[in-house]
Length: 384
Image (cartoon, rainbow, N blue to C red):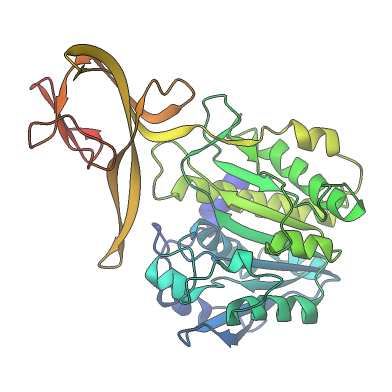
């Protein structure tokens, strides 16, 4: 199947960047065909609608939810690319809707999406509230699960740029997890099904992003929604949209998430995931915190009347301003940094660096400085 061509055909052009809210998706919901059932299933803390999209008449029930962390929007963009496919007159759309019945929550935390925060309006992480059910959004996610009784759950997230696929020096552009269902992290038939789907997705994605697929940590926490649903007997997969080189808007990663959705559906429809793929699953490199957005190598600084050569790292912080996400680079670490990689790396060849006040930058300073009075770093990047 020509997955990349399908993505180009069905990409939702009105959605882009990192800031995706109800205001962005409501016009799209209004354009869907009559076989799509759009419902305001509940309200957030701040009384924003939480929408569900239900479509398909098949026996296999798929429950998908995105943006339970409000600032994690890549999987939402890819959801609407996938929904555009389902909304088409193609033979593939017809086959998918005859095989599956989809229950989709495109934005599970609309208040967090509006404020561009991980947490909801009560400052609660909804992915740590699956047992306590202290929040209306958490209760709704569970209520839909109980009523819909899905055969598979897809828990859709973004992950930070700090993650690599192992310590290979390649970013974890997409990561997956078949969550544990108990403290021992045992493999039962339920988790085995999720594992088989992930292995199939990984095999396809390796054709496009070799070495850039990671496996998320499977420590058990029943207050996490994936662990909770897995423990209740539903095969559940965590999708994590991560960093592709120079893709801070996550438009490249979005394509691979779309491909992952399609491969998952095709794998389930052909029952190709039921055989034991545990060995192949654990061969996927585990996510490791090994990246900074910037590393500046071989910087000369004065220390106690002695000069030494060291390295600096900087990391972007994301801020919301005028409905747009700004990326602001700050010094995050100073030292050998021998265990880390940079998405952007500069070698300053034993030059000095000074900030606008004439001092050597320190941790939490903005990454704006002069390099040996010759070059200028502005917001992390070398100014040309």
